[in-house]
Amino acid sequence: MSCASPLIDSFGRTISYLRISVTDRCDLRCRYCMAEEMTFLPKAKLLSLEEIAIIAERFIARGVTKIRLSGGEPLVRRDVVELTRRLGRHVGATTGPRLDELTMTTNGTRLREHAADLAAAGIHRINVSLDSRDPDIFRHITRHGDVAQVLDGISAAKQAGLAIKINMVALNGLNENEIAPMLSWCGAEGFDLSLIETMPLGAIDEDRADRFLPLTKVFDDLSTKFDLTRDDHRSGGPARYWRVGGSDARLGLISPLTNNFCDGCNRVRLTTEGKLYMCLGQNDQVDLKAVLQTEGVAGLDAALDEAMRLKPARHDFQIERGAAPAVARHMSVTGG
Ligand code: SAM
Ligand code: SF4
Image 1 (cartoon, rainbow, N blue to C red):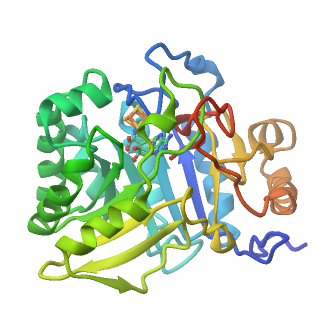
Image 2: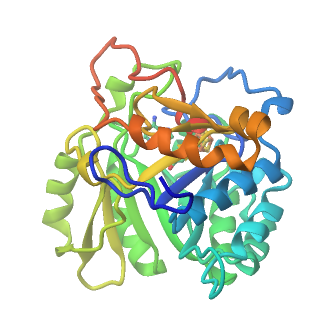
């Protein structure tokens, strides 16, 4: 296989999207994501900024056109803005390896501080997680978060010119009554909204089945309140999109439990410690940090080819009361 050949898996899917978890740490503890007491990786185990950049640039050379920085909370990592500057140089490049888009998913707590730097680095769009705009419910879901701080961060991001998509995990009995108002608010603010089904990733202190809210049900309810028209936009991911009448907002549904869209999957995920997972919900992985440290950049291409052979067809998520998570890794480790 030639060094710069595109990344195509054994099911014929072209991989053009890399997600990178730059840290597994976070300043919040969302109940569906993490346990209250989490053990994080020792800092010495994390990929250095240089290692992340080298691996990411190899992916770009192999045809990846979109990179999302995530975590954990990416903005708690001190050198993340420097990383965005380095990778941002490839966005829209007319010579050399080119990225179409560099994005970030953040909980928004530190956006006020960093939004302008992210925009200057070449990030044009971000996803901000906001499961509730009600201060008490937000604090309950995140265990101690302050929604005012996140809303202020969102407003800073808007001022900095970043396009914003709100991520909202639909939670039975917690935020279900806020979904329609959230869509109206997003429409008024000019934001897109992605609704997400809770996924069985990593042990938490609760049973996810108690909070699982099928998006089929949510969509039926929203259809009675909004004029929703199917939008053909595809991110190559698990989301399906709708236009919302009377606004510029787009509604995305990420429904891995009620609707599996793995056949069009275009992504792989790099963990904080340098392991490349080919599926959020499976354990197949290639240790790119080990390859980089033993064989240097020259070893990465063969490792990426091996990863393509290992990419599984699909996840096997199920949410059943008392069932163990599909994989032991939390979303924060693999990069949500
Ligand atoms: N800390 C950042 C944030 O919250 O946006 C980025 C990392 S977080 C893991 C990325 C996204 O994954 C968030 O929108 C979060 O709500 C979602 N998420 C986390 N755990 C999840 C789970 N078990 N099921 C579904 N979505 C989850
Ligand atoms: Fe942190 Fe994001 Fe997980 Fe919430 S969803 S605990 S903000 S990593």
